[in-house]
Structure formats: C-alpha cells, structure tokens
Length: 329
Image 1 (cartoon, rainbow, N blue to C red):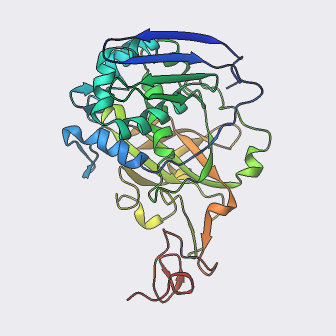
Image 2 (image 1 turned 135 degrees about the vertical axis):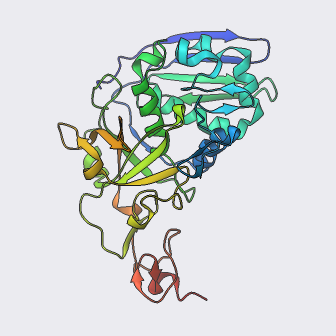
C-alpha cells in the first residue's frame, strides 16, 4: 500500500453520553510501520470474546462470538460497535451513545482493544479520539497500518477486512506482557503491500509467524511458525506465540490464539516472498499477516538470562535450561 497523502481533516461529533472525534493528522514522510506488543492485549481480546461464553476449538475465547464480540449487549459483529459494520469506521458510527456505553463497561480493556483496532485499520494520517463522559479524559488512538481502506471510508466492513483486523490483533498479543518491537508484513484489504520502511527488513531480520482467523464470526485466531531457518532446541522467543512446535493444536501458549502448524504448509506466499497471501486451516482460507522481529527478541539457553518463556531443568533446551534457569526444585 502506498503511503496516504497527508491530510488535515477535523470532524467533531458530540453525543449526550459521549463524544468521539475523528481527526485526520498531517504527517511528514513515510509512516513508521513497526509496532510493539501490548501488555494486556490478549486479555482484552479474550475478555471481549468471552461475554457469551463462546468456545472455539475447545478454548473459551470469551468473546468473539458468532455475532462478533458481544460485551454488555453491544454486538461488535465485525467491529460493528454502534453499527460500524454497516456504516464503516467513521465519526458518525463511533459517536453514537452506545459506543460510550460499551466502552465505559470495561474502559481499561476496551481502550487497549480500540488502540489496536485503529492502529491496524486506519492509515498513519488518521486518529480517533474519545472523551469519556465518566472521567472527562480524552483518549486518542493513532492509525498506522491502514489495512481496511474501505471500512475507514465508511463502507461496511468486508470479510477480508474482518480477517485482516483479526490477524493484526493476534499479531500484537504477547503472552508475557513484554513490549517487543515487531514489523508487520502482508497485503491490505485492497491487495496492496503494506508500506515498508527502507531498512525494515534489515532492522527486523527474524521471521516469526503468520497470524490469521476471524474473531468477528467466531472462527477463532490462529498462528503458524514462520522461522526463516529451523531454530535449535536451545532457541526461543520472548514473543512466545509461535515458536514452540509442541503448542501446535493446543491453546496452552497464547490463548485465545491456537498454533496451527508451519506457515509454509498452511499458506501461499506473496509475490515478493516476504509475507503470505492466504492461509488455510480446517478447510477455511483467510487473509493473513506475517511478523518479524529483531535478534534481541531471540533467546538462547546459555546466554546467561532466564527469559520468561524459558524453563528450569537439567538440560540445554529452552524448556529445560539449567544454565539460565537452574534446576527445577
């Protein structure tokens, strides 16, 4: 996707219970498309998903029900908060009082969720701000990746856009709540490559994972291992959502994300070979995103630090690392 031309648009929409403002922010140069995992995002997704007690593949996803994330009677249904699925991600859709009702029901979790919905869906020259009628605090959520151009322009969210927002949310989950900078690669909903910084591939040389699924339809979230080369038994990642082959088919590593296998076996690569065009699991094909990170996120048993994903033990592997984590008591 080519970088959007700088715009200066200010739209203010007041409602009796809440005020939400859509701002177009002029920016110079290419936007920074690297981003970081957010502590609490996994919990926020799970909490939003779990209102209906929906279980996907034996995993209680706490939310993304068949009708989307249903929280306190608000059906997100493809992020259809207050009709966003029909009316687009616009000031008019977000300015309805029902958005404030939904947001204030769980403001801390919903703030994290909206931060990444906007970061994933909107381009870097747009932001959304919400003023709480309860606290008077104004929260601003910045666009970045611009994955859903139609939705941002007010069109109903498409199935492809639902899948890309879902993949993007999954890509930002970190089991340990550690902020690890990542680069997100792939295609937007129009099939255009996500804009890439001139040194992005060099700055983030480690291929990590593919993420896909559709939380809006209750189909779940999936990851796949996408290492550029086989990691040794001693190596692991502080991102932790797609490094462990033993997690394939289980929910033990990064709920609500299920590790589905190897990206190379699940997915069709993009023309440049950097990302993935489609991924298929259980007969369903999705539009995925791929992630990369820097070498500093990679751990090796024997490097002198016991990182959160490493385990105690008598061996030299990440899950039994005597040198870093000592013997198990």
